[in-house]
Length: 247
Image (cartoon, rainbow, N blue to C red):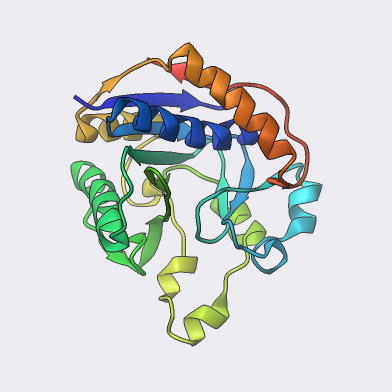
């Protein structure tokens, strides 16, 4: 059975470092690994995103919300305690990007189906329910392969809409559909909270929750320190509180 690491809270820089460290563990063990995690309020932008185009930096500053850059692609994403992140770490280099997104969004759709919701995929990486985006995702391909997605359950949608700036130019040019910038919580459609959603995610993955080895925590610390010197923090303050690993 697949191993699942369930983490809660912690500072955003540590959570981003964990993505890289767990990829290393997947390479080491040859296993496909999963992580179900919740990040403290923050805005996470893609590796090539211009923050001024996609984030209201002034609003983020006034609300004490840090802005950080992840190593995968995609646009700006608002994280808070009502937005669940789901990561898949494949221990090999997968060059078929369509397969990566099909596998990742397929998992999200199975989760939604288990919750009684019909969904479909738009823009390859967005999962949509009744015209609203409930999940967005991005990927990274190196020695191993990472897919990570958000799942909006009980997020602050008003703040999400105000702090992330839609790229309407991409909609007008036909490169993406309007649903990409039309977010909604699962709780808008069904009675569900974060705990129930996490239970469903773990059931659908069909794995077992496990603890991260000590060597991975040490790697997280090393990666985190490296990120501090690489401009991963765009603005704002992050502390050193590690996420809780829940079983």
